[in-house]
Length: 412
Image (cartoon, helix red, strand yellow):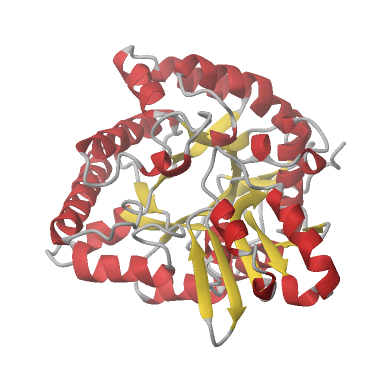
């Protein structure tokens, strides 16, 4: 059973099991939750049932007497049902009654994120498609109704599209136009109601925007070329997924500082961990066994982009999916260097078997965030519990999620 958590920061105050505690004046205050895209089920009934079954069980362990944050995932179908049948107010009332606070939404997966095969489908529709804009507009409308008065919210979204083939000029224009329309909608909402919501672009390996510098160039070369810079910078931000940055061998602190130096706000941070395999640190006779352990993470549902740094001189080898990297490694002359795999693993683990994790990147990122007052939303996003090897699933789903949240609070 997970230990009792440290106090959880929520809405500029800290809650523990017995008392309401205000944070110190020099503390950075975060809203903390876990992303519910870990739950299977893409319709509204399944969304509510999963929150009842899992989120309330997590809350019982993490914050039994006070509200608990969640990063709510609503598929396009669920979002449309909430609005079409005018159920948003009732849903908001229920969330308030049970003490779940959806301060952020995950607007990346559009359809069934737990279908038998997801892979590249998670990037559809992309930001050239009007369906992506309508979905995001629906989420804005829903989040505005779910949030308490005076609070702000965030919505993460995909980094424009999958990156292969590269976008042509007309697609770059469509990407920027779609997001400008979203910024205009958000500006109108804030002007009319005072509600601040921002949409956060989430760079990911293999996508059109896969590194921090890609995001910065997109803002500079495409988004900020037609004026209205203040509104665009206020309402369009970045979602920094720690796992994604680690897979790309990015320096966490440098990337976050680069965003801030470029005037791009970090709307939320997804606290997640990647697989790291340092073959050079393993005796030669044990490397085949280590790669065999890696095969246990090759599965059919999700895309697991893999980067291999064979040496500083050779640069990085990129593979769209882990099976392709494993096939490439059938040649023993390639059993060297360091692998990083986009497979979200429990954030409280630093290693398992021959594998390590990118947990150190989480710690570096958190240390940076403690010294800036610009980031409020932290969302644990280990969506892959259902496809992890059984050896890493030591308990039920709610217990595993609770242990992650407790670990995160202890680091803060």
